[in-house]
Image (cartoon, rainbow, N blue to C red):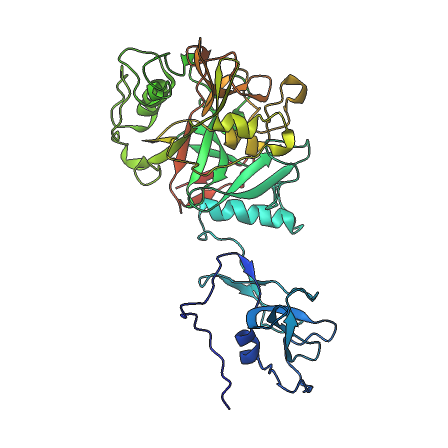
Length: 451
């Protein structure tokens, strides 16, 4: 009579953990119909959680005796049980769906189970369509698309180049949440916008969509390859300034100084703004967009990377992205889209270019010409070296180096190309979340279009 169940968790000594997966509690089982009989007698009953083939763990502790702690478990009869924590029982994973998950079909019976929409984005948006198309390929449905939804990619980013037949929409975490990124020999991430052809790089964790320019003069179906992805201006990243971190020249380009951000801003002003001045300096204020772009473009916080020095060797300081993406021990390489520390430099702007991590996620590595990857969507329409915004090393003599993409299809961690040397611009912009789709399937002959 004194036994009761509760799903509240407000005691001062109660432990909690945040995760996507866990176990049921003993109270969950009690509400479902199970009981714990103190004399260990058996009650045979039918319960939807009953599994006659195994004992399985619950998440709830029960007591601590002289020998060890004990936790609740479930017997094969369906009754609650107390097990010593070093005992070997089975595990039944439990997950939690969000409250706004959409039902597609089913009535909950075994022969007609509920089917929910695993697509996290709002219907009729570009993000929703991208994920839906990749789901259709994964499920073997007849479609013109070829990219498959695969939360874990087929090859390991930063450690391996993407495969010839690898065409995946995979998932990683960024500062906003879960980001869906294209990896491999992608054929269906084309988008026409402002009479230019773009490639979708990834859906960011907040639902906004990052693009990179593929061809600035033609519709996607007419693009023939070449240098049209780039500004006609060969530009330096910034100038060598001993008195400050050299990356600051990207943010605050000196008057009449040639630098990447200024040239990107001038290109953006000419194509998206109400006035198109060719500025001599970088602007750190929002430009006035043409009315048709106000609701479409995001004023993004671009992550220029962590300029923390990991260690120094042979007259060079090695920055954090270099250590992650170019570690001599390939097994220790990894990609991250998250902010690492207070030394991560960020800038707000409508335009920039990609990070080295985004290029590694797409399928390129920093292993030189022997591991070049021309079977990758970022390698197409790319006949020149192009700048990225991730720091690499600092050479005492020549200044800072940043990552760039070699025209022969691999990621280069600087080394011999510092901020003073010429590279080319490849503009990247970000579309606002929930931007509406008007047509297309993302293929080159039928690119996505937006309202």
